[in-house]
Image (cartoon, rainbow, N blue to C red):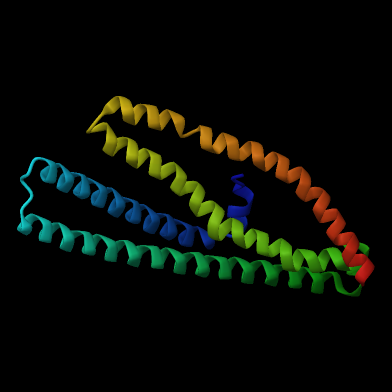
Length: 199
């Protein structure tokens, strides 16, 4: 779920999230333009008005769209990696700084196995949150609005029905997350217990 506290803790990551969402949105626009162009070409074909010149212009246009889409998706991946690296670096520095502040008596506050799990898998989960979950969350809000606006020019009722069905997706995800959260809590306890045993 969306956690404002996590974003406040690492405000530097917001810029990477915004850039990643923008790149994904541009890729969506390229997909929409390609689909409209392909539909227009098929209409011309069925009406027997498609000429070689129009077809060649359409192919060149499609290549340009795919090149732009490829570039922005590559940039989105780069922003995702840069943001994730930044989050990991900041969180690990904070964790090590806190351990140094506690000194040799850190075991009074936290078990060594839990500390190891937190520094490894715990931070990796937050990396996934900032690099993948947050951008996808914002994109999943932006994409339906964009599609609604564009489709409403063609058929408002279809656009409205599609737009009203969108909340069903996050609701099902929330339901699955609640179940997963309970399972993850049991898993985490077992994981730290196993770490204690190994140590």
